[in-house]
Image 1 (cartoon, rainbow, N blue to C red):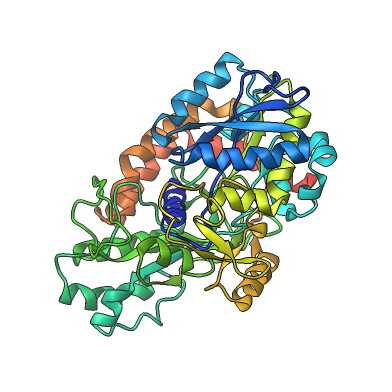
Image 2: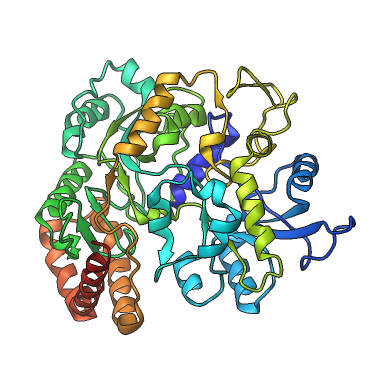
Length: 488
């Protein structure tokens, strides 16, 4: 998912329909900002600080002050420093006001974040009324809400994305690629014959194969729930699932044919979207990507994708971009009021996501815009972790039909049978550590097709057995059964 976030950041930087950004706040501990009664909010945000931050926030804070008598100062923390910095902030009990959520579930359970169940209904009702139910359900912990989520990609779908320049150059037919890795085999072979030194399927050591399942703890762990288990979801070890084993066999076949880089299991090689170093890759898309629009803009040239999995509303999507209020904040009500404004005031949000109006963009009609030459990388905030994507203006290239399709897809997307389920690991912490240690030894080589699954999966599963996977699955299933019963 981090990779997906980075792609969205690139998309925003290269002039996307939805630059996904985040906005924040700074100050000390809620003291006056110089004007009597004006509250100064301190906010942490992940990512790089825009080069024109001072100008963006001068405009934004004028609007914020007019509307709710507050100002916001965003303190940016780079991705590389984020975990260390926020761990220290939370451990110290610092009285910050707003932050992009760091380790949302465990830190909420520890009491690091303010309970927003009632505050959100009182001070952010306008925005909360717009949110699809999946965002609230996916963020509740023991019945309480600790985050104001960004309404963005309400569902996610794994796609196989192709470099259109190669598709056209070699007249390759990708229309039969649909719903499985296996369906891409023939077109990968055709490409490899033409370009044996370019990665046909560009993957590296962090790659985890996808299929129609949801993952209670993410793909690093072996646990999964198949999407057809709607009424009685069952926890499985996907490496024991024949369907997933067949996928690994397909990938191993690709590896043997040279369709996957020979060093994939250990490689951290980057395959930039705008370079001809790859033919096919796996990407995540959602409704506000408007098909391949975001990726194509990020690449600066046409890319085309084919579906691999279903469109799925899940807990991970609900928690994709959460904002929390520090439990030690002296300004909880004003912090929530600010988050409501950020997500309902189109003038404020678009000015942050697209930059300075008149210099970087201009309105074309009521809700569309044209990007100007001044719209450059790192001169605006990004979009996936800023605010309500539904009030962002769309570029002229986005048609009304695309917007209609976006809204219909949000209404019709499949809902994960475990949406909102939060596994409490207290009783199986030792086994969990053992399981992830085993996965760290096997996952990369199996998922990249480097080793033969028929010879190695049994060994993996035997090691998982010794690590205590059955105890974890039993505890997880018990908690899931109770969750399903409570939510019927």
